Amino acid sequence: MAQTFGLVQLLSVHSTGACVMIGPRPDNAEMLSVQHDGTPAGAADAGSLIETLATALSNYRPVSAVHADDDPFITGVVIESV
Image 1 (cartoon, one colour):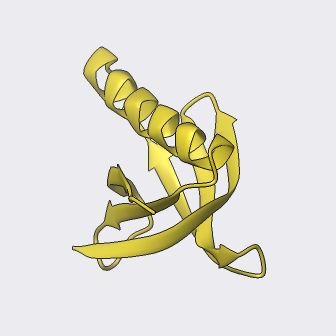
Image 2 (image 1 turned 90 degrees about the horizontal axis):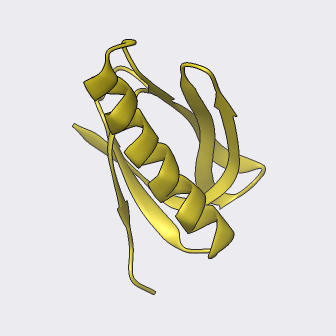
């Protein structure tokens, strides 16, 4: 598992999840994604991740986003202390 650390630079929410850019600056950020499988449980999990990312974005707090080494799909998010 990989972790991407930084500020949420961009969060774009759509019907099946969200696109998010995380990094120290907008011009130095990694594009990651939150997706769900259409099930109620999957939608709830994705909603929780998106809510956490939105909280970090609005409060200018860094996050650690957990994802597999070979794909951009976020499986966990932690808001880091400053």
